[in-house]
Image (cartoon, rainbow over all chains, first blue to last red; front, side, top):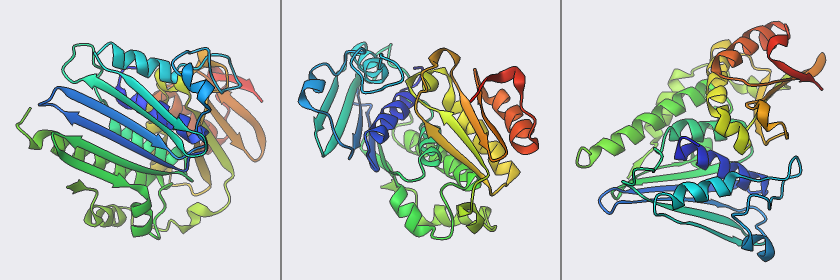
Length: 185
Length: 122
């Protein structure tokens, strides 16, 4: 994957497949501490303990269309080559939390990429699912909660492509403002 | 804390000042963008973005878009399936944003199946 936002899209789709209806996504860019952390939490049905042991093994998968599952393995590889780690915590019946850390300035760290496109792709492609997104850059944060948006915009649907188009643009500019607000890095 | 404020939402609302209640009516065409790991790595998100732009421009109330997982044909990703009421579902392969735009304009809006891009009839 060329962008970390694509990994996020992929892991979130896992969470939805696991039956989650509210997915929390956190991106924490601590540029001064040279750390990047991405957390994806779903409230799906979780994984049994024996599955967890082999979590990064691409040949262990719950899918049925083919026998290889690459999503988590790819994210683990992306994190590990940047002196980072991948952790997966799962409780049957409660959900799964995937958290990946990276050294922010590691030369092999992929760019975070187009978060706005990832979010709106998720929103329009999964009408019944809610998303809570938080993004920190050096302590300042941006957040988005589709449950709030839905209640504020009672008569406007989040599956309307025009709404999605404008939503993408506002997320994009909010994140850009956040990135440039601190220290001009 | 920066947040998508109510003002932002109101602005979006003004920009989209039009009748949207029909959006929840029956769908006659369903477009599925396959978004497994393979699809995403091959560029499915760009396909979805192009599709959203075309949808916004076409302003048709009876078209639904959904994301789904891999269908097991990873080498032909990104795949897009078009299902309409009056014909068999068509799976398109090796999609990119330009192909998506063409398929949307010709197949979805005009009903002309783009056989050059098609993988299979289901």
